[in-house]
Length: 130
Image (cartoon, rainbow, N blue to C red; front, side, top):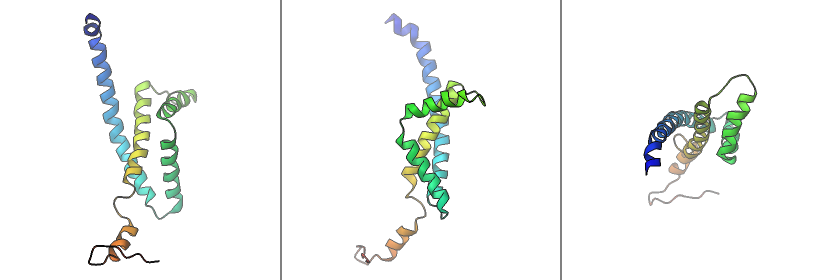
């Protein structure tokens, strides 16, 4: 029990850093996800393709690989130097942005949904036009 009491300040500092990374990264991730979801609905095919590649690439790689790439890969370029907290925020934001974009791609304006509503008959079932 004495070990836990002695380690409590270190554990609380770790909790503080974790919550700091989480709050900032989720806010940034939501904004990234919103932007990417809008790009997925863009009529310009190249923007749609870029957003799809981003989502598929980020969701298709393990989070630890992304973290290593951001922390060790970016730091090895010697262009900028990232500390561990900044690398964590960037990685979680990029990862969360891809998941938010995938979850929100069908919400909002979607012409195909309007077409289905127009073809709906009064009984509530959809007519299937072939």
